[in-house]
Image (cartoon, rainbow, N blue to C red; front, side):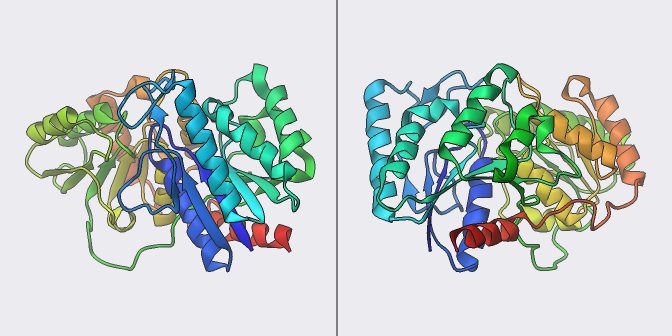
Length: 370
């Protein structure tokens, strides 16, 4: 059984990494998956189809730019939509999985609506599934339109979250009207890494892809001396999208006992061994932190109109599996106080959140296709 899986990451790397994890789990279950990515290529993440890359012009998602950093025009959109349709038809897939749309990625309607229409026209209509994270950023005035698009085009909606933590209606009010299309899978996270002593006892500071995390990393380094963990090594991961200027400034200002690196492929192993994690509250980082049962401080990104990370961090803090500091309260003094509370907190429980989303997503697809 063949699956064509479309994903578009615009700012960070989380959407692509989650899609790659899902694709791998589907392959392990026996499905033949074509993973098609529309964002910039990411070292260490393999895709089967790389479309002409586009990304957000800035953190407000105000427009799309191409690989050369130029705004995309209508001719570029036509070429890209054509390339996507060609790849989809060549796959001869039994299932079409689209990440996030129509709950997000409105910028990509120029290619996704033609793709969906083509999928409905083929002689053997595929199963059409939306793969969506636990929390979305749907504006209330657009909810009716989103609901109509789901009803018109999609057979199933897989929500990669745990309703005990974040019911989908917390960010999409008419979720109940999706009826039996809606299925929770649990959070999607990689399998645990092999047991090692790598990073044992460190404080691990990270900011996901790093496009919007420089302030958190700098503040964490300044807060270190006021924490109970000032005598332990701190490792700061700036992220692949951290600008060269920000990375140089982080490296220059790092005090003794603090290592600054761009990225680590062994991030899950570092999490499993750390004394404490300080991070933003992106989906992948949170899922990996919960899987590692690491004590954590979440400082959710809240730039522009973003509310996804704040809601996720708030609900996890209420559940007692993480500590939280709002981004607008981020100062060295405030961060040190929250770090000290988190350092004294018990280790999060092993069964606090459903983290079996990768395996369950593959199971669901196979059940529906059968």
